[in-house]
Picture 1 (cartoon, rainbow, N blue to C red):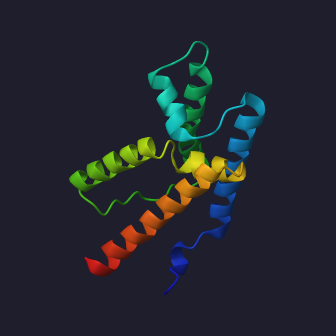
Picture 2 (picture 1 turned 180 degrees about the vertical axis):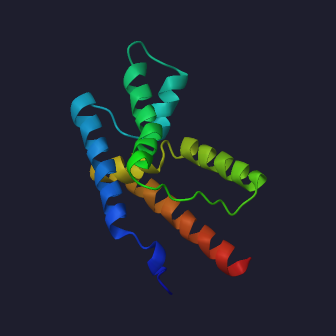
Length: 142
């Protein structure tokens, strides 16, 4: 195994992880809500009274943060090595998996594990194993 040192970014990755953890901690401490993106976005589809503003603000922050970063630094080039049909199928599979798993990677992997949720531990183990298997099949069998 070789490390791609030109794309190895431990400090940027650490900063991103700290920001994700800080945002998740602030949301639960200040609002009593779990920072699972699928649940936050799904709550906008069936909004409860007085529940939409924080959800919209959180999702707008996800979109606006990279744009703000782009004002002070160069954003990396976006490169997708798959065609539109593959991207659409992948998105559909992620959506179905999120629904069946009762949450997304951010909800289970970041917030659920930090709360020591057994369900999140099982979900995280399953989606990590599925990711490992997918990478192995795509890179070594195809």
